[in-house]
Image (cartoon, rainbow, N blue to C red; front, side, top):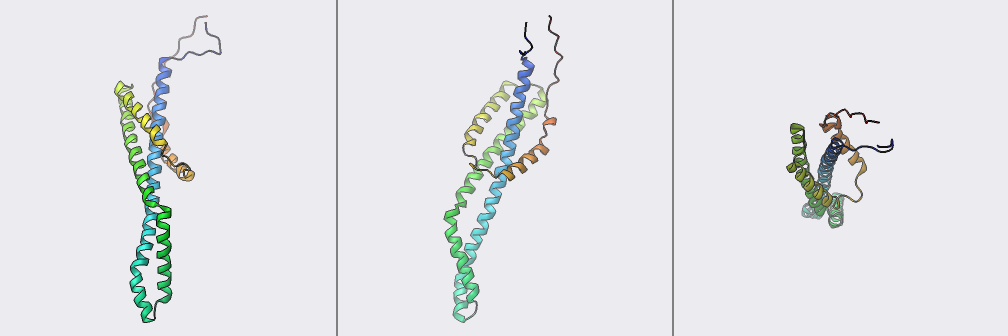
Length: 190
């Protein structure tokens, strides 16, 4: 006989718990895909601005030199040259190229894992069960997720993360994920 503090964990309870693990992983992967996609976009924009400043300053250098030699454009040439020098100093310091590469890889990997889990979630809803193949796919995704999490931003942009999480909550609301109907428990004999 079970005391009141003891509980019975049924196969149904284990199945539902595993579903929630899969759904949590799926939604986390979706959030990370969005986050690293947006981070990649941000860094690319910053890099383009910096490269533009560098290109504008260096390519205008000859025109500025000629304008300066002719006696007009001294101030403009000084500003453009200063911007080019500053951009040239900032390029290696900010190292946008390695950030773009890192964010591209993280975005691609999280996108791939998210797509795999999206297929599993759709299959779960259609079949109303978790097959061995689905379980194997989820286990591989969990391992890869663990590997990728080491490469995550050490200090993520919290505001961007909240925005990504809100987007996932709208796109994949938990109340739309399939869960089995809980069977009635038979009362325990006293």
